[in-house]
Image 1 (cartoon, rainbow, N blue to C red):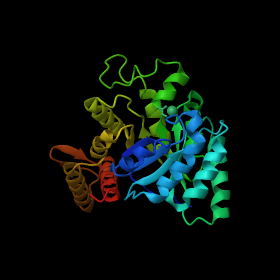
Image 2: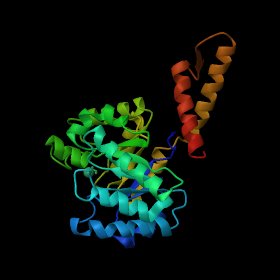
Image 3: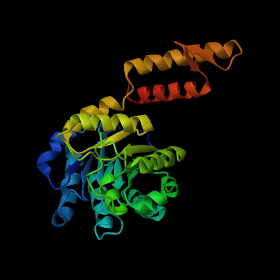
Image 4: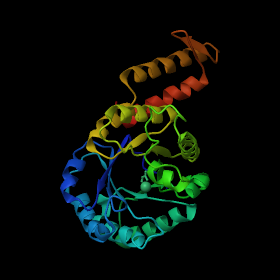
Amino acid sequence: MSRTVRARRSELATPASNEHMFAKAAAAGADLVFLDLEDACAPAEREAARGKAARALRELDWGTTTRAIRMNGVDTRWAHGDVIEVVTAAREALDVIIVPKVRAARDVWWVDVLLTQLEETLGLGERIGLEVLIEEVEGLQDVDAIARSSDRLEALIFGAGDFSASQGARVDTNFDPRADYPGDLWHYARSRIVVAARAAGIEAVDAPYPNYRDPDGYRLACERAGAMGFAGKWAIHPSQVEPANAVFAPTPEEIAHARRTVAAYRDAEAAGRGATGLDGMLVDAAHLRHAETVRTKAALLGL
Ligand code: GLV
Ligand code: MG
């Protein structure tokens, strides 16, 4: 079965226990909003939050925003209840489930099998997609198998907060993209995740940026992630949505340049050549691929 192709420049986190934040999240303009049943919810609130999330998914106007929840990890007592209760109550109003702390492909299969049974029992018309967080060292080691574990899987997300803890790094001291040494402490993890995602034909989404009062740092982190091939970034505050949407979308100049690149390459091809020049720069088959990627992204975003 084919996967749904979605924009995911911005993925906005909202605690599923805090109903007063839901309307603002739904109207924030994010490509995806997830109501979080996991770490943003106090453990005592997690069961009650399921009903709040399902009601919001069904009743609010989400416009074109993808509607998601983050469930609890499959090694917790909440996991099966999260999936069964929210899917049963929200039905087609839930597009995607985010699975945290995935350590192995079998964690994804477990959710996939449960969803398949629920969709059949409830007679759901739409298939629910999955995104998974790579935020445990075991998950990073097995990331290739995880990326290929289910045809519901649409994206891998880098969870730098938990990953720092899992690796034994000093949490929250190393996210600032302006730090000069050792540069991006998470460059290896980020590269590993993007390559695994792309090789499996899915997307990668970059980590949350905890300092929501640092718009310049957030924008720079978006630019770095975009340069590496991430399709988008988490937003932990509605103010982070606009910069993520802007940075991860191709600019009008990029779209125009892509169109000219394709035209130049086609002209060269018609003249029996495999390469040409455009504004003093080489255009060959690799540049054609870049240009086509820009055009595909622009078409997805209606640009
Ligand atoms: C996200 O869940 C993170 O741990 O960074
Ligand atoms: Mg986490």
